[in-house]
Image (cartoon, rainbow, N blue to C red; front, side):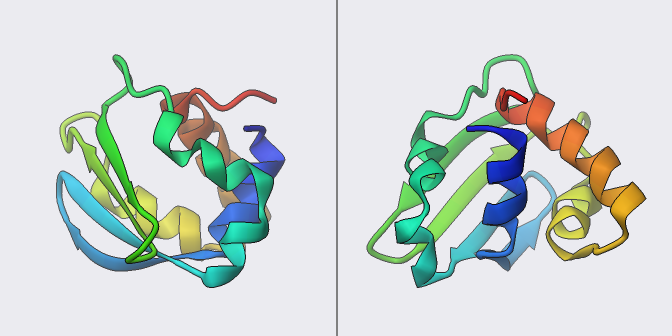
Length: 103
């Protein structure tokens, strides 16, 4: 997955439920057509603050367990919602690093 893929995919994700340490994202049905979406199950989570990811394609959801001491809870939601280009760029770098996303 590349950074541009992550930007495209964020428009197909919304927060279904969130408590510090665990976020469940709702997946737009259009996500099935995006080739990078297949990588959700294979995101690199070792040593990044991301503890686990679980994709449930039948329920169209992605659960991300994370260490709230390493990742500020509000950053997930802000990344999905912000349209500020500077803030998007900063958060994109953060999440790319967390998930092992390449250029």
